[in-house]
Image 1 (tube, rainbow, N blue to C red):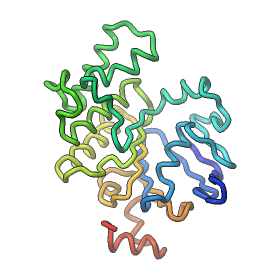
Image 2: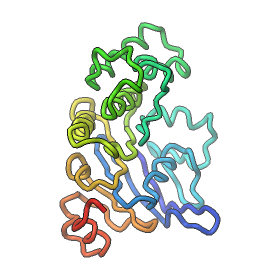
Image 3: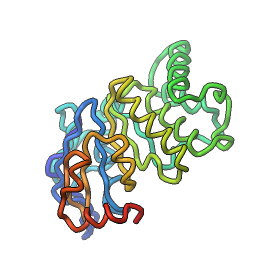
Image 4: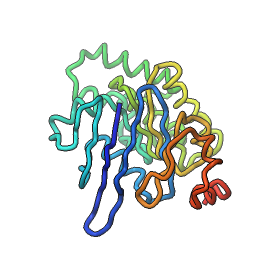
Length: 242
């Protein structure tokens, strides 16, 4: 569904990405693994058209979006839900209001359809009984589930996750990873997971690309990470918490 072809990105003299090529398949879960500051979140921004590459192409469903305007990007972005690392919820809005806000702002849907979609995502995320709660009253894991429900509200084909379990306790992390797997098994969606947490990769990913110093140094199934002789990967496997 999404393809980066020979993408490079510079900010002044700083090279963030160097000739990165990557394919994200429909209905598959792709992890992008790497240390903090490696450019992982930048790849998500490129996929959404939030930033433009210095060179190379970004394609969504075989359409080159590299030079699209904001108006042209709107239908493209509807194909992709995004779950930000900090969730990006509206503090003054309830769970229901957070989920319905973008639908009401961007699509001319009847209120009955909006209510049905919100109910669908509240049920999927296991948030029944919290419809009228404010984000501040929820745990970190529950806020993440609200963000996932909101990402699904447009019925996307792919969901992009930026560090989905960062800062969560092990029980909450497992619930989020289980939810990501259900996206694939129950709804048939694909996902991209940007993470620095090795356990997350092995828990949900069909394949993993390792980004190091702006380059893809590995792109295969997670189990083959142990066959790699690259010094960063062998060090990372030995010290996954670093």
